[in-house]
Length: 471
Image (cartoon, rainbow, N blue to C red; front, side, top):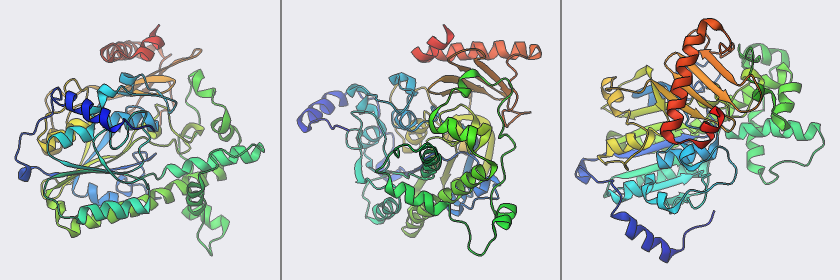
């Protein structure tokens, strides 16, 4: 990605600084440090604190053991670049007309109100390490961070720990952006290209494939029969397609279409096994960062937020990868912890937008007024009291070929392409999203209500793609 030329950047930020609304409300010594840890492609159930018996995540669990775990947190768009841009800007990706990982840009005028610049202007030291995956002209430096490392794995853990061990004379915001369990992508990609004798995709991804190969290793001395009987995760109960599946979901070609058609149960179960191992790998890296936080005593004055950019379909409905409004793809962990000030609690009621609620939340803890007009809200009142006045009744999920509204009980999605295009699911009675109620006359009133909510949200955001789906 291109950077803004130094002279132009100085002039630009000097002129724009006066217009930025972020201001500090507390003395620097009274403001907590902020540690935001994020993974890539980890769905909400991939933590042992969720009761998942197939994965062990002691580091993530330790955050949950001292804080609030939000059970209904959804990515603003379950694809890397849109979600990550949303996190740093506090805006839905549709604000920048961004739907996929394809070529995109944000205007330079948006940069001063990005997360690092907001915190730096308010007196925080700001540092970022690991994966970025943002559109031009976003770089760690242009959005207000010192870039401590490009590495997304063990070196990131080491550099983040070293940063924490430094002497700090001002509060800090440290973002540690880890890559895994994203390496799971290469299992389906390589299965497809190998089976069809095609050139390998992403040939430079050597480390990724090495990690993937290591994740597929099974325990020594265990027979294949015993491995699948005792150790390998079973098939999910929602592996099959949703009834009256929207036509767009059956249109995937390439590796996604290949594995949905050709993979057998053993393939899917090995995918799930490897996904767990890659999650455990990143958990160990996170553990190094948390150990440094405790070692330095900074944990007593540091708010920890943990989340992921999006999930992985993990064999649900015959899919792997992301980009779909199903929970496995769009629902993510979202944990908030502050040693001595929060206690372990599970919030199963409030709908959280893990991307657009991030900046308001971090600003709230830091005593900073966030940029004006952001669509998200701070979850701090929910963390501290379990309630907040007039909390949202639905949260939006934007995807490359659809838009969705998740209300407290239902999820409504509208896809592009031929009919059927709508999907309505009762998330209380059907959490696996197996039955599409959009054509059921008994739910006509619920469908009409969610169509109304959908339209209102699209209009409120000025979402041109969403408007196009309604046309």
